Amino acid sequence: MATPQQPALKDITSAPASNAAVSRSRLCKLSAKNINFFYGSFQALYGISLDIEANKVTAFIGPSGCGKSTFLRTMNRMNEALRNTRVEGELLIDGENLLAMDVTYVRRRVGMVFQKSNPFPKTIFDNVAYGLRVNGVTKKSVIEEAVERSLTHAALWTEVKDKLQKPATALSGGQQQRLCIARALAVEPEVLLLDEPCSALDPIATLKIEELLFQIKDMTTIVIVTHNMQQAARLADRTGFFLLGKLIEIDDTRTIFQNPAKKETEDYVTGRFG
Amino acid sequence: MASSTYISDLLRREPSKTFWGRLKGGDELSYPITLACTVSILLIVALIVAELWSHSQATVQKFGLGFLTSRTWDPNDGVFGALPFIYGTCVTSAVALLIAIPLGVAAAIFLAEMAPPKASNLLTFLIELLAAVPSVIYGLLGIFVLLPIIRDYLVPALRAAFGYVPLFSGPFYGVSLLSAGLVLSVMVVPFIISVSREVLLAVPTDQREAALALGATKWETTWDIVLPNASTGILGSVFLSLARALGETMAVTMVIGNTPKIAASLFSPGYSIAAVIANEFAEASGTLYISSLIFLGLVLFGLTIVINAIARILIIVTTRTAA
Image (cartoon, rainbow over all chains, first blue to last red; front, top):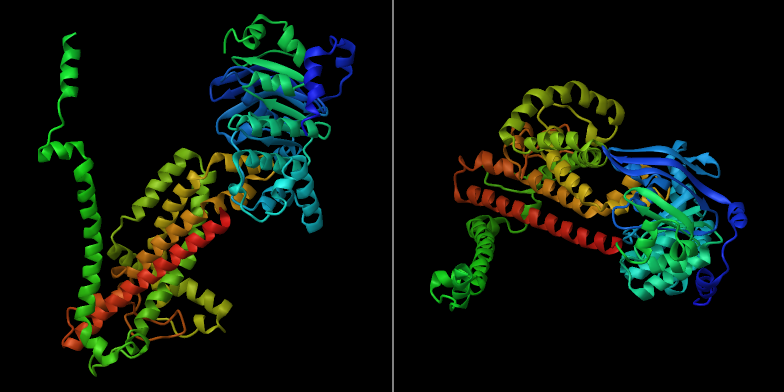
């Protein structure tokens, strides 16, 4: 399991400079057009426009309160659960504005994993099966197959296959977070959003999650918010830097960390502030 | 730095060994004092049981455990049995909960999950006021408002729909087990709403978000995830209500009919343990009569304990399977 991310790690640091023509031809999964976001009268996001490439890992970095999580939660319209919020602009998924779609349909296509692992107080099996059941899958064999597949993708199957009927809350913190990833993967989302998924985990559990994200990126498009710049460097194909509600720049991860276009980005990634 | 000299003098002073000095420090005296408070509660409970037991000896010696299963309550002949009262108490409480649980939980879901917070707080305040209304007022409400409604609308409707079931047949005089159950349900529903709402609000937001993020609707999230998370607390509110319903005296005696009979129909009058004690104690003559009423008190106490024990076991079992 440790091998796949090794070449990718090298990729970031030693591959030749990117080719602009290649990057333009990449398939765009999600596209934000001038997104403004308001909590009441407080504006949290200012005119965010960016493209998320399909089957790539995109990381958002930036200091606390910079709006990266808010933007992430706009992409599956999670912020709508909060009162008194408003979003302006367009968010296109495969060219269609998801802000105008049925919200449950959006969330089925754009899954999410949260900062703190939040398994339901149900069995391990029922946790993973919930997304399928709530979306109308009733056939037992289909559910069982999907649960096994998702747990395998989340690198949890071998650890839990003998205790699927045990409560999910009995798992360790890292296992719980992988269970939450499995739960999100079960409905086969086209995009998977992760909001600082490793911030409460130790380095070994973090490594496991990073490995599994590498494994699943050909299945889904991954967007991850992280406080940990090394994590962004290890994981992401593309990295966006947020500051004070604005997207300062987004580019290939190597460019962001080695040759950023903006002074603010350079200051942040070199540790001059933040 | 004069002030800092003062503080360092103070801090280097030996702790006072007087009674008040030790009380201020806390550690040595807090243990016996808090222990004494706890023990005093247990003593009060033990005292109640002992007193009830010693004063009901005449009945215990005459009827033994048969008192609990005897259907006859005839003070003139000196024959006493508790079953009609146990029956009336249990049936009215059951009717009350059957109505109050769905009503209360549904209202709590609305207040916690759907209503705007400001409206929810205002409504909850008004609902909690209902819990402060004296029970005699509920009795009056029952007599003047509920009884006519039950007589004119509910009973004919129930009779038309379920008249073939003994539970909903027979004549209706107004005062009845059904009326008492309905009044009780109005009385306990504020408890269920208020406690359940608090419990629902305490369910972590991340549980809701996890379900929503999987494409669940708001209602599916509430039903599948939030309610199971809150089930223990909601069950707690139900048993709080049950305790109140079992022991309620004034409102029940005003509408239950005060007839020591066991009838299958909810339309017929009945009697509850608390009501018979309140009604007959002052006029009871003879040792056996008084001791029978006191023994009834012990039965009510035991009933409450048994039901609470069942509740605790239920809660332990459900939380074990859930968490």
